[in-house]
Image: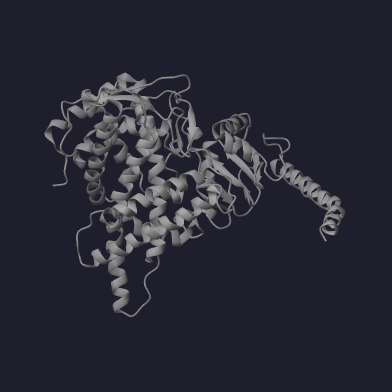
Length: 514
């Protein structure tokens, strides 16, 4: 029986080999036709393309695509990854062309090359048209001045808690007999941001046990983002997908609890409360009228959108905090100006929280935050898929199914005065380069899907900078290549931002919500 089966398989082998060879040939021909004269690999590895290079060394891969695009009159380069033709777009105006044409017959925002497999089909990222507008209208109350002023105390208390821990890790008490040591901030900052996001977004609705499970699942999700989309039992990608399902389920429970609390007329204390205020009223009115609940009001759907917020806030914010520390350390004159400004507005000795009004007075600190985001845009690219053929230029039409990567990072180094220089003064009232070169400042995206929480993100970065520079003395543990860029999945310093920390103030402030 076994020998007969082997003989049968052996007789089929030439046909299977010929079929694979034919498929590989057709794949090469398809790639060459789609690429046309664009710079990119002349031939690609069958079926996988450049996937191994992308996963093993993403920084080198995208740097190479950037150099190829810079060599092209169109500012575009091509490649091929796991059965997908991809385009890298360096040119600012072409990036805007993609952002401005998110619609069924043009480009579909995907957020990640294999995003739908991870996030699911029904997601804020993938919505467009009137449905997307309606949902953004519902989300708008989350980021009003009143809502933002509710979040800032929560952010500061969590930042302070973690700064104390960081100093203890780097400079143990003298009684411990341990010398100061450099600590890597990446995972520490990520943990701080995860606690901040959980507290600001879901407030009292996450128990301590739920938070602990949340942290584990979010880590599984992060690991899966950097892996190939092989959805097999035990694979990192499968673990990430299942983790997302659990995270969304947890956040859906938070939405339900918030609705109940808002229906009782209680004051909002976190982002989901501001969102659920109007939703709870509409759901109640529909219930009384015997009608179906309004669109976008289901707990499960809201849980999915909350996860979108978490994903957007978490890793991008961590990236910006790390680059802020890195760039302030390497630009002592900027650090001195920030300290002078903050000291004239807020004193740690006051044991008072930084108010929203005080934060708005920190003009130079805001300029530093904006320059950090420009100089090191955390989400360097915003992947889209071409739903149909699209004439991107007079000479090139994007084939249907192409994954297009508009590079907001590359755009940030075009147009501005001396764009390769870290220069917060470019955002001053006198120079106003954020307005003059507004089209090049794409760190928060553009078009219908422009980041709705950008003011929250800038506030968080400003609060961190103000508290970090006033409470802590810091020094980078500088090694060769420590400031090189690495993808994890947003960009951060190659050494994970290793620093020596010590207390700068006589004592840490005593901050509380009351």
